[in-house]
Image (tube, rainbow, N blue to C red):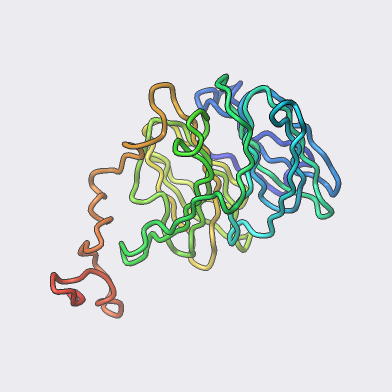
Length: 287
């Protein structure tokens, strides 16, 4: 399912995905928070919440140990070149956000979770950033994957959150894969008039700036970025009871697993041959 957003988001919190309606099976609420310079927003204290800074500058305030107020400032000028700052809150912990002089835009993800865990501010240095696909598929699927928190560093959370930056003309979420856990993708492009494509199950979608895609159980979801543009997307996964998002997930489609091998014999046009697969002695394969 695709939600297309025309123009800018409204000031304050604008809901994109509401799990109280027909998308209840997603088990998550998702929206965009837009703050004017000096504007503030109360994040409440109900449910598990993740506030990810997309642009601008903010001060985060939240309840710390012993009831004392914690605070920290954060700024971000580029989704594409900088890792995020994320405030992750458990149910029962109050928080608010105050925007700096240039205003701010944040994504807000919520889900039910009664398990207690300490609130944590994840800084850009805490984000696991990697180039996935590097050295395979003639670099056709090399992309930056940033994981803010998952089972390895937030084992009591019901959310997993991260980002992908897709380079012009390259694939991500590739090879095609699926998992039983619901997932939300939210997109931005550089320049903003850019576009990409995805196939969610058997349905193809053109992706544009500020679009949101819902991915349900077993739906395969590869993405590709149009040449000339960069594609950023936020991804949020909801753990399931008894099926947390960790190995053996994601599940790659059997027909396409072979492309991940560094020596996969992938056809290339004559002008580019010799740049990919290798013979056993290390020389470039030229056929």
